[in-house]
Image (cartoon, rainbow, N blue to C red):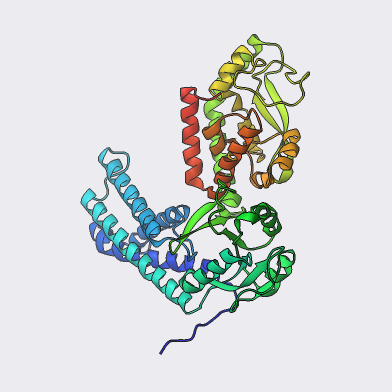
Length: 469
């Protein structure tokens, strides 16, 4: 007999499943540690202060690495295959590095490589099986209606109808379709089984009253102009927003695409206050900027002397910029142009071979050495090492009128370097800004410690090779 579907009218907390993953992974680690590692240690004395402490240290390191590699996500739409690939790749990288470091003497040779290798293989196998079982249980619960998230489809049209049918055929993806939100010119009732809950102008009241946590945008081709106004309307609401395909070219670069049972959905992250941005990235910025200041300090003296000898004017160039949440701050750079370079022209973007550059300035900009003083801005908390470039108030006001959602890049701290900087170079006109916005939005949607490290390493390569401008 087919069991009835249970509909729980509240959003199931995803963090519960994240903790289940962590606890079960730790249990798998315990089994492997006691079968492979403990027999190789000859430790006497209080067991808790010895072998158990070693296990806790090792497992804590695994938990931290898994966390930063997004392996404790409670979302039910995660691809199980990609999760297992990331898990196996991380374990292989760590175990391989330990074996190599032991071989060349960087770390003590406490356990023979064969044992470490065997531990790594078993740990990978056990945690992989653990993930498969837990994700399968999660899907089974969703099939029974447990933990689904209340969802509305914005667009009472053919595309919306197909989306509703698809989600109803794939209950294990966790979407509980409550109804449609219609737009101007769309019917108030057009689906036999799913009601139209109201108009887009009433979206705030509908979401609050119905306890909705997800919205899917299903706009027809002739409704594309409504996309950005709708996203701006949804921006302050505590929901996740997904877009049905065929609109990707409209918002190219600002979204992360995921597969829902073979159907690609564009996931728009409206809320950027992640734990990494809020807690870990400021710590990362402080220590690495302090280290950068210590390392580059000798070059500051040389650069200052070169600037002073080369042209008249101050050594440091100070300029008012807009930072996170539209706050103003003074950005520091080594002066690379003649003094009062914008006296006759007003605010303008620097060109590739700008005539205002001094002889030393062209060299400084090529190797990005003029950016060094902005490490002070990072220490003050006004900037980050990695992020969208801070822009001047004059250009921000102009660009916010020209490009919808430009203000999204002001939701995180601006950076000395960033994905847009290493991919596109300096802005010279509005078309350059349009291209760089795609890279900025990609960074905002995908920011994590590994992307930051990749950008920093690439930036170091640009400095060393002199490929900047």
